[in-house]
Amino acid sequence: MNSIIENFYSAFKSQDAESMVACYHDDIVFEDPAFGVLKGEHAKNMWRMLITSQKGKEFIIEYSEINSKGDTGNAKWEAHYNFSKTGRPVHNKIVANFEFKDGKIIKHTDYFNLHKWSKQAIGFKGLLMGGTSFFKKKLNQQTNMLLTKFETTL
Picture (tube, rainbow, N blue to C red):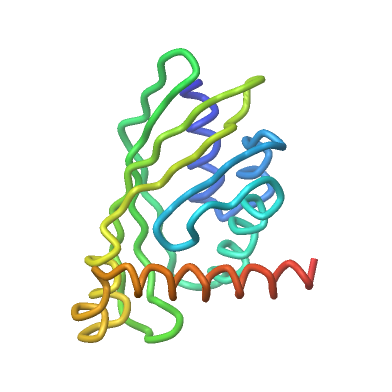
């Protein structure tokens, strides 16, 4: 299953959303601190939205430590970009866990420090509020609203 993870991140690095989502099972469940839980096409469309929003911008993906055993796997990846709302530089370090079914990723969970991310992306307000459940809930609402808006263009 290492090859599936490798294909996913190689496509991500190349900003090829369709190759990324081709690694996902139709019943994919994705979760991270920014979006919360996304299932099926919503999870796939989140990557399409992210790649579309970063085309032509300085967006760097690095990945390492890909491991898998049986139906599970993990990897580390890092994203370097400027947060669109503030223009502030972000270097986000993420640990990803995967579960596989039928030769595809059925569950993908990304873990990162939301407080650290919010401090970089938003600045002082992120430093003050980024570690709260209120901030996480508000961020999930905003990111999911953007995803819903994006999906109307598909």
